[in-house]
Structures are given as C-alpha cells and as structure tokens.
Length: 414
Image (cartoon, rainbow, N blue to C red):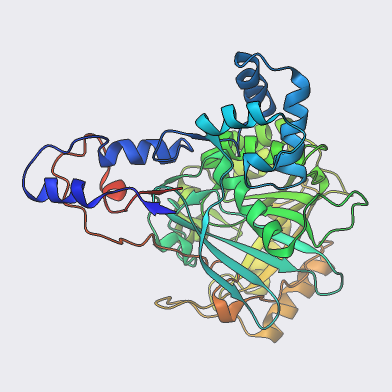
C-alpha cells in the first residue's frame, strides 16, 4: 500500500494553490468503488454477471469467467499474473485495468481462547474489524464479518454503537474480510471435502447489515457460490437489530439464517436501550419474523439477548419474552454483557443468567448461554470498535462534496 495523498497535494493546499491532478474527493470516490489510485478496478466483489459483462466487452467467452472465478474465489490468488491457465496476453490486458485486492491488516490479535481478530484498512483509510470464533468442541468455527464502517444505531449497551457511521462497505470489502481470514489460516483452495476450519459466516460485526442490504446480498452470494468459496447458506447467519422492511426480502433472496438483536421484551425498555425500536416496534418486528421464509422448527430464528444487570434480567422479563415470540419458531442466545470502557452497564451474575435460561426452558424455549469469547482482545459480542486513523491532517481547501468523515481520512491504494 502507498499513500496516494502526495506531499505536493498537501503543500499546494497549504499555499492556497489549486492542486493539480486528482483531489482528495476523487480518491475517496475511487476507493468506495473499489478503485486504486491509478483508476484500476478491484475484481474482488464483482458478481458473475458483472464479470461476464466485463469479459464480454473484451471479446472473451463465458469459459473465461469460470476460470477467473475459480482463481479468485476457489484458489484465493492475489495477483492476476498467478492465473496460469489464462494466456499471458489476456493477463497483461487485465492487469492494465484491474487488480485482485485485499484490505491491509493494521492489527492482528489472538485471544487466549484462540479467538482471532483482524483490523482491516480499506483503500480510503477507513477500518473495520473481523473476528474468527472457533468452536469449542469441533475443529471449525465462524467468521464474524462487518458490513459498515461504524454504526448508525447507537444501542446503549454496544461499544460499536459509540462510533458514528462513516459509510457502507462495498461487496468487495465485505467478502474480502472472509478472504483475509482464509489467507491467515491457509484455507485455499476451497476444501473439496467440506471439512474446513472457517466453516460459517455470521454477519454480526460492525454495522447493521440490513441498512446496507444490497451490498451484503451481493457479498453473500459470492460466499455461497458453489464454484468458489462455497459456504452453504445453512452456515450463514445474518443478524439485524430489526430493520423490518428488509427482513422478509432477505429470506426470499438469500435464504440464510436469521438472528434478531432483541434484548428487551417490551417497547418501553427496547426504546430506551435500542432507539431503532421507535421506528420499528416489536409488533412489526415479530410479524416480520413470523413471515420469514425458511423459518421452521429445524431452522429457528435466533433471538439474541444481552443480559444487563437490573435492566432486563428478571424472571418477569423471561415470561414476557415467551409471550412476545409466540408463533415464531425461535431459540434464545443469552449473552453475558461484555464490559467496555465508559459503559454504565454491568453484567447479570452468572447464577441469575442460569435462572433466566431455566425460566425460558420451562416455557418451551431453548436458551443456551453464549459464554464470552475474545474478551481480552475486545473481540466479544458488542465490543467491536475501530476508529479510522487520521495519519495526516487534511488541509485541502476545496474537497468538493466530500463529507467531514471522508476528509478526516488519508486515502491509500495499492
């Protein structure tokens, strides 16, 4: 990676001169569209249809699409030159306008419990976190992927919500998080026997996936394509705070597992700790869950419920939950609150969490306790936060329509 905001641009801005060449706004726009500073476009994140159209314009057959798809998503190559069954002439031609991208790792941490967290920087300098959570009982686990830089929801108990939304991630930036995880564990090419360490994807990282639905959809379609990364839709779960209009659409178009960040049994309490409930109250949310395509006893919706001491953890709360979800095939995941710096909340004592779980079980609902993972590296549920670093103060006088958030970041590209 090289810094594309040159000293000349900075000096020109300081002297009041009009910068020659691309402005900071140009770099930000290119980065958000998966383009490098030189204008080349990232192949990662393109759909099959887009790749077919691209190669068709170059006079190439659909067979080339299959070959390239295999190299990028089955074999995990990082350089067009490594596509050895494609002619040198075509590789050279592709390299003029395209590249195979990856985010840059700015932090790589492993927890004492083997949870693995990566901080990834994208081409505009913004960052997001991705976490691998290994299964305690099997040699496999889930990769928790972010959908946005920051978050717009401001849930009171969530560390990520204290970071304001900067922007949506592109399909390439979303799927490339999983690809970086595969790079780290050497899991290329895609295991043909289905046995793999990185076996599941959970859209539970930074951001609200259904506020960036189109990009998330395209990324997950790439992940689930049987000729590439090949993750079964039964091993993909999308978690939402309750963006009602997109819930049924997600089930119809993707058919992935659904998890609801519930955390309260009534509107008054949920309005207080999750402001999104004021827009999409519980009755509307539960109606959407009851109509979620693919929901069944064998594939229930997961209701995520963080345990907050003295807030939502009483037996009467458990009984209210059972009444709320009537008619929804679901189970509960009880999440001990993960403390983060500056939070006013405390975690419910373990014995009280167990009593809460027992109450739900007596009422007919599974309620396993999701014991925290990766707490020592702030990788546990609700702890993800990665503020993009300002490497150099921007003094560019005229950045067009660039937002303050964009102007605060130094743009970088391969």
